[in-house]
Image (cartoon, rainbow, N blue to C red; front, side, top):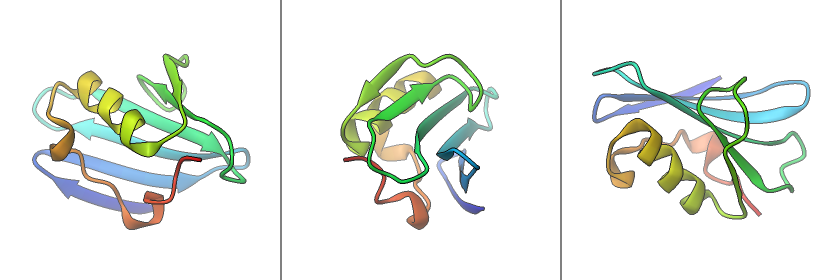
Length: 91
C-alpha cells in the first residue's frame, strides 16, 4: 500500500487480486471516493463513492477521474493527493 496526504485528504493506493484501487478520505467530514482500474492497468477508470461501492462513471484518463473524485469529496481537484504508485492509472 502506498499513501499520500495533503489538504486534509488521505489517499491510499493498493492492488487487490482483481483491481488497482485509489481510495480517498477527507478528514473534515469523512467523505470518501475511490478510483478503480483492472489489475493489468489497461481498462477505463471507474469512479465509486467507496472502494466497494457502485460505479458512478468511467473515464479514460486519471485527470477526469480525479476531477469526479474531488467533486465527491467536496474539494478542488488540485487539493487531491495522488500517491506516486498510482500516477500511471488511466489509459
